[in-house]
Image 1 (spheres, one colour):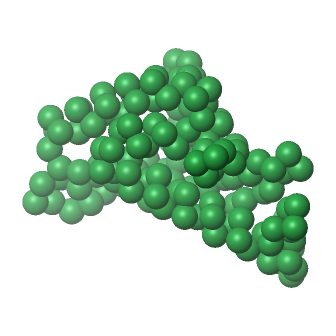
Image 2 (spheres, helix red, strand yellow):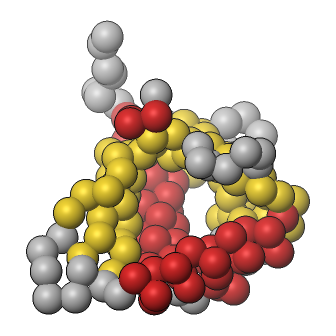
Length: 153
């Protein structure tokens, strides 16, 4: 597989340099993961469009809309509090593909790791997140997210 790196920063989408879009996507994910790990559930759900779909490998069907996303994350946060320790996420190796309609198709690796009280961290899951980001009046939002896990492939 050949990856073209020459000229990447010069690519544009409707006059916007690719490097600026890439930086916006990186900032979006940094912000989103930090508010997820802080259990700021309403703000995290707000990073999705009203009609967003979230596909997770351990759910029988996709979860739709912000209300469903917030319920799912709220239940996970309650489980974590009962278990003690912390559950955190790391996102990296971001690939951003601007689309003609102005959306961004992204793909990145995500690590989910646990840190028990008084213990060392350990990786629980290695995932791939594939998103469709759309620009709204409030900035970038996720219209669709598909998460796959390496151990379930």
